[in-house]
Amino acid sequence: MKTIGVLTSGGDAPGMNAAIRAVVRSAIYNKIQVYGIRRGYEGLLEGDIEEMEVSSVSDIIQRGGTMLRTARSEEFMEPAGFQRALDMLENFGINGLVVIGGDGSLRGGLELSKAGIKVMGLPGTIDNDLAYTEFSIGFDTAVNTVLSAISNIRDTSSSHGRCTVVEVMGRNCGDIALYSGLAGGAEYILTPEEEVDITAICKKIIQGKNRGKLHSLVIRAEGVALGSSELADMIECRTGLETRVVVLGYTQRGGSPTARDRILASRMGYRAVELLLSDSSSRAIGIKGAEIIDIDLMEALEMKRVWNGSIMDLADILSI
Ligand code: F6P
Image (tube, rainbow, N blue to C red; front, side):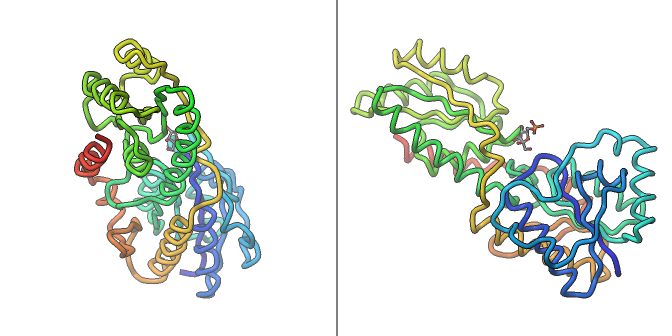
């Protein structure tokens, strides 16, 4: 393994820069040439590729976003585009690739691995929706961003005696809602993994109001079938409490990564290069407990997520 490439793909996530830095510096430390591929698979097939030096990744560990930029490429999914990507890798002599991204990005990496490229997948997504790893890069920062928003919302919600429905990201995964709801003391958390029980939600809100609570917070993951406005209307109608909706949107994708995300990204990036140096086949890097793990890339992507109902139960008990 003499030359490797690194790219970020799909939705960006805080900590991607720390991961790029770790890959570049670990490679150079091990005397491997390393190329940065801009705009994910789109940049790969267009040859938007540049050699990275130690200083190419200076002053980025603390930054959100991705210095390599990112894209979701339609062309890469087509046979001709895919072939162009393979040709580019060959032209640059890249035989090992680190892909930092979510499920779709790692699936792209899997296809390249079937064509003979050694691919290491790093989970870079705020959604935390990859089954093979307990946590993905960016998730912790996103949860902390939601928490900071919740505490601001709580102030004004208390002053006005309102209920607020806070909509968070996560695609079809409820983890951002679940973890920020538990950490933020929300009255109710709605996730795509569980049924919506509007009677139970309103009962909880009225219960809080009756014991003198001035505000109510309902965290709704974007993947829940019942929309935020519809939900707010139902709560207002059934509880008599004025109810507002706040959609946090892309604020959750930006911002300086937390220490936890930076450390996770650094450890995972280093492991990816270690694996590229060894004889192992394509792998997905993750974390289990305190340990950085790696498993077969295809196996990782075939795994089904297990919903952590006990955290939801805990949140429910603590918000009586
Ligand atoms: O996967 C990250 C994510 O932010 C999801 O939570 C969200 O549903 C989606 O990306 C938004 O995608 P886009 O950047 O295409 O609007």
